[in-house]
Length: 422
Ligand code: HEM
Image 1 (cartoon, helix red, strand yellow):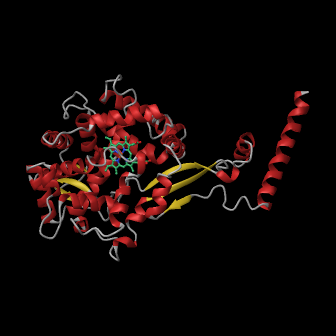
Image 2 (tube, rainbow, N blue to C red; image 1 turned 60 degrees about the vertical axis):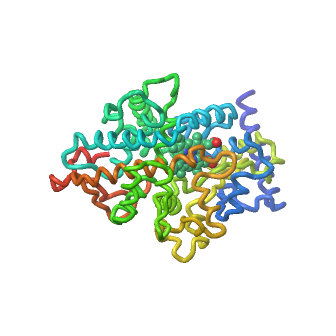
Image 3 (cartoon, rainbow, N blue to C red; image 1 turned 90 degrees about the horizontal axis):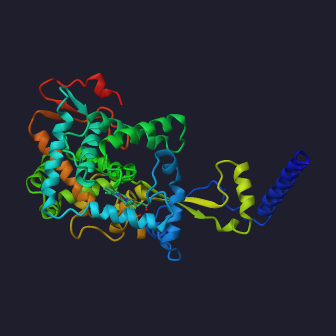
């Protein structure tokens, strides 16, 4: 009986699906392909997309969680970026806010910590290090001890585990859209090494939840800001002033032409926002009249096609390089951000680096100063003359830093094969 009825049920389902598709064409319901991605490229459109007036925080969390599902599957995250749960959002954002409550005076401690992290990274290296790997490792040490409060001296963190974690996150990120057996193996290894670095399971049941949003964004802004300023003695000098006196006033202090360390960090994030695209999966209203069970079946028949939800993203990178910034929008110019110089529309686009609306980054006012202090510590270290920064042909992103290295001045700087392998 079952054998007879199963194909029959399948045939009936198929006929219904085909009828729905034909009907939708007839009534012009399917005006855009189900796999079309809606891209938002203007201030108004991005605002309406990330914070529509008719939606509450629950819906916003659900839309973000759906869009980030690959991070849950591929990277094992279970924080608010991948969860629709209001309680998860509240607990996670409160914990992050507590962790980054750095009173003014503590920036000096942050600077000391970074300096120790830099020395720890180069302690066992005679020739030097790859620049991106160096910034990644220094930043991870600082995130673990300075933000997450891991109770170990920053130079006692196990170097092997540090490297496995930074390489693991970078590789998993690129594999996360298509996770397979190799990425699952990588995740197990990554989690094992991260647990060695963060033993406190009660406070951090899944340390990746914190490490990924903090480290992934910070290291790239630090590396890029250094790449833009290392060959400009004047800008380097401003960072060195901040190293001596790590205060918000120094960070913001504008020279006669308006340039400041804050301007350098802002301009770096304008041209290279770490979150280039902010994605959401929103309900597709056109299909709301079709029963959910049939939509599920249709998605099964057309794998990769979403009939129930519409993927979209805010194109932060494009809007921050758009014509609103003038004909030289692609040129790095930190003076753009000086007091009174930002023109209408520019400040609005800048704020998108940290998102928009109720889910905007909780570290938005803390992170730029942290970037500046870590950058200043690296410049101060290079001033010592023991190591030099050798630039590569182009500024990278998450990857693409070929040729960039920190080279020992005494050894003429060939990088050992151990340091080359990733
Ligand atoms: C330059 C550095 C950073 C950039 C550019 C950045 C960017 C962003 C963006 C674009 C969002 C919004 C995501 C969305 O709407 O889907 C976000 C949210 C968030 N970020 Fe950051 N972030 C940075 C640093 C950090 C750091 C250091 C931490 C933690 C210590 C952090 C924690 C968070 C959290 C918890 C949220 C979620 C807020 C919520 O759901 O209410 N971020 N960040």
